[in-house]
Image (cartoon, rainbow over all chains, first blue to last red; front, side, top):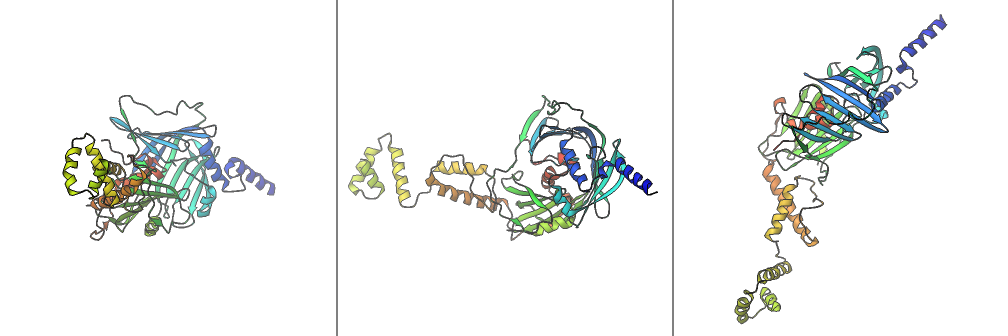
Length: 315
Length: 150
């Protein structure tokens, strides 16, 4: 009987190779590497609140460089071309295409941006059952926050490759806030980089939007004294406010999975500054008025996180 | 004759020489630029120099291209005018004055402002779009940010 139990246990490990690891966090490290190193092409559905969109993604690693093309299949035929840290988005309209450079993209399935060790400090890892997603067997893993400054991330990882095939972000009441899931995925289909090019339309005018710039030589005059635990500033931008010649400070904080934007900008003449909190879908907003400035934090995090951040801004 | 010119601007010329000097100098083709040169030197020496109209216009044009931040301002590394080091104090003065006046004209007087409750209908879309464009892991990333096609 003892031997039978042992054999059954070993068989379980063979059936679920993702679990055959002494280090349970190894599964998350493999998941991060899979989204960077694998060559894959697929279509996934992304839902945020009432919004549902289909997205086609092609990703490849050539040498040590990552190439990604992401096409929006619903609504405007927008597309993103990403080569390493260079990200360009093509917004396609009836008469023109607006080209914007972006700082970075963390789109599903490449949701892990930094060191897994940092995530480990603020999330607990638990394992769920094996399920089929997009015709492939997956292992469910859950990243449950240790505090109330972030949401739970539920991931369905491909048993063969460790790539996330499904993700659900849920709150403490287990309500679904955001989700993305492949319904079709193939590996190693593209043998070269011929696909890595924007879909050009000669009948349209191409316009470059360079409104966001880091070159504006301004000192940061404010400081956030109480950033939620685990969050670090990952980006800081200074941009012109639309239709006027004043600037907005935009700082982005992340714990490796969740993000908070902090905006500090002067209040326009004739407009009333906003105060208080607002929630819609997974996004929470908190606003404060301080010394002529609108301070606002936006994030896919609980309201406590955005509120504590804006309350700590001083200058 | 240039020595007399200089004396004229320094109020050191004899009264009887003024008329002959002006009538002879006014016929010379370089007269205007030379007189302007002496006036400038005199104003600088007396600490009364406030710049030429062209200089002001060039500075204002360059500043006009620079976005304004009401706090934490430091001058841009380069302006689109060719200026020597002497004029930098003047530029800084203009820049700070312009920034204060412009910001004052375009922003609220904080003493008279009454904040209102944040509601969904009045949530600034440019802020939401800037957030999604830089942080989203879902299709919200595709949102278009501040650009308008003029």
